[in-house]
Length: 216
Image (tube, helix red, strand yellow):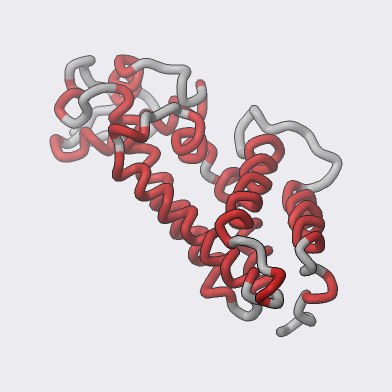
């Protein structure tokens, strides 16, 4: 048997896990990360209620696997946007923020599983590690931006990374997400984030006076 999207799924024996992941992503998109049961995921994958237990202990373990895959994608997206901070840390920092918003918009099911599913991190240390790796891209970017300030006036890079993360995540979750929970805004989420980060950086002594000229 083979499985495909649309209608009831069958599956090759080696593809049950992937069928369940796909089913979970579709259910998250339709109902939210807390809106379906383990049995519904099995039904959406076209298998018996007992079949998912071959790969997952329970619904939380299924959601943890979805979230892990999301964080792996997220880290790759952020790292590609940061690109080592070239051609200038401030230019790359703006790209990084836009990439955060783009991920929330283009991968809403993964984004919800990562941040809204309530997966317990204390029993999923690998998920915690993947989240920290993704955050590590933002922290490295903050360190590079801080390094453009005089040493005596540099803020703690971790504090800056947490502030920018909170800004990016709040705007993405409220205004930039790619599902029906998105709120309307009289500007693009990217413009809102750019204005918020610029205001923040100007408070640190960075901003328009330190922005590189186009092409630099």
